Amino acid sequence: MHSLEILGLGTALPEHSISQAGMATFATTCVAPELTGSKNPTGLIEALYRRAGVQSRHSVLLESSSDDEATAERFFEFVKGPEDRGPSTAKRMNRFEIEAPKIALKATAKAIKEANIDPSEITHLITVSCSGFSAPGVDLYLIENLGFARSVARTHVGFMGCHGALNGLRVAHSFAAANPHAVVAMCAVELCTLHHQYGWDPQQIVANSLFADGAATIIGRATAHSDGHSQKLPGRLVDNYSFVIPDTSELMTWKIGDNGFQMTLSPEVPGVITRSLPGALHEFLGRNGLTRSEIKSWAIHPGGPRILAATVAAAELSDAQIDPSISVFQRCGNMSSPTVLFILDELRTRNASLPCVMLGFGPGLNVEIALLR
Image (cartoon, rainbow, N blue to C red; front, side):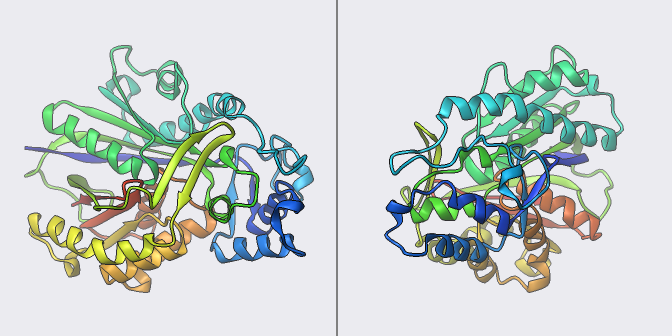
């Protein structure tokens, strides 16, 4: 039986960033005052953005790194009235088609360099995204610009939400298990800021306050379980686990609208995680002969402050164990699927040890877990 040995990990962000305070100021330009029913809508938006826990984020829509929204490209024009919902989905997808391949290439080139392989050696290419689509897509751009073999097997994992990279890793692991000669590239790229929503829906304002852009790529190869390996990250991907929590399909959604993709996030989600995650973790670790106390590092996707707090409580984690997730979230925001790989990168800069559990949540409500050893 073969597992997936991780040879290289690369991350990439758009060139420019903006502080959370700057994003809050920008957000007020996308809300018609007459919709709010408040004498101080700016204050309410600023309060929601402060509570989000993000300090800064990167976006392909910024022309410079500044808190002055006037320096941001006016892709999102000032709201024209209560019926204005911003750019069409087609306009947002056009921008995705232009920008997503660029940062995907940066992340993938870094991962290939670290793996010390020639791109032509890669047998399988997996791309992951829930924030945009086009065909030809990111995968073809990587093949054309990085020198992949024309015969590389392509697979796209689409619209699976924040745990999409864990689904992509499952596919990569399956390729490695099926082919002892497999060399797999898995690239997750998201441009969540393209889907900033206009209007005065509290759930949409919360989503606007969290999400950001980024890309991350892993290069791995098939390796026998018995081969000798380091005890430090990134290690080998040896198992995956997926669990759909019953009766939760409406608690978290990500749907295509006329003016971008729209997220809903019920306030019930943290409570559901607190109740459901312990059993899922116990089953997954048990089948791998492990207990929670034996896990040396945790890469927990930070969906938001309350979801992260619920995960900490359910998994009985310490502040030190969750700090890498918080650090990435504060610096970069929620980049959806690549975020957990940014956390994995943060863990290895801290010289974290194996075994490592990677964990994320998404629409379903679904739990995805992966184990590195």
